[in-house]
Image (cartoon, rainbow, N blue to C red):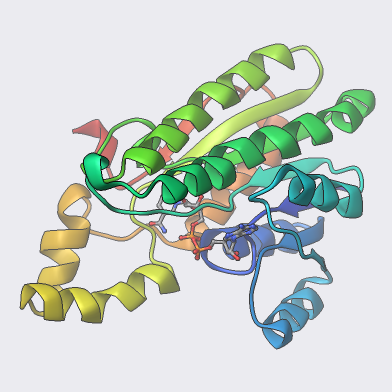
Length: 250
Ligand code: NAD
């Protein structure tokens, strides 16, 4: 059980972060939600989980500091907010590069450096970073995303080593394609753009990388995150856990 633990999950108004927040709440953690979205939706999520929501834009140092200030000391920090942009490197919009590095990588540095002192003082903490299969391997046209996610892998290992004797662990979870509303919404457009059926889009485009030919479910990531918070996972640190249907085994 995670009762008595405060868990902050960034990007938890949607997709993977929402599933992780739900899994933590089910284990009894006091959850702090973060991310953007419809006010009524956020209010209903807070009620469902007995959670608080802190609105902050993690693109800036000030936003990260405001989030950590309003969240208060946390026992579990899940750095999950992230974004993607797809473009050849020689055409990659410079502002998109900076935005992706700011949210996917630099924000993780800020929240981590601000969360660590209280964790060290308690002698217990869990830092879980949502990386990606793209923290271990690459696909074309995702230079900023792949750089940010490879960066998360290195950052997490460094933090794990620095905190190895403090009771605080730091790990990455690296999903392949996850069935989120975001992915689901792309299917009709891809069908039209490529003149494919729904099944062809799913199997020949999206799942081409995943040997299981199945999407990862957000709840499966929630379960893995909960495991990493257990006492039995105290010696799991500096790891980068794939949950990608075999993608990175190839
Ligand atoms: P999503 O778009 O469904 O959710 C993103 C969340 O981040 C939302 O809550 C959103 O409000 C929040 N967010 C966006 N910009 C923000 C900002 N500037 N400040 C604060 N919050 C912000 O995405 P998802 O598919 O659930 O992805 C979550 C994480 O998982 C990301 O880091 C992503 O790179 C990673 N990931 C996703 C997949 C996938 O297939 N969906 C695969 C591998 C890794």
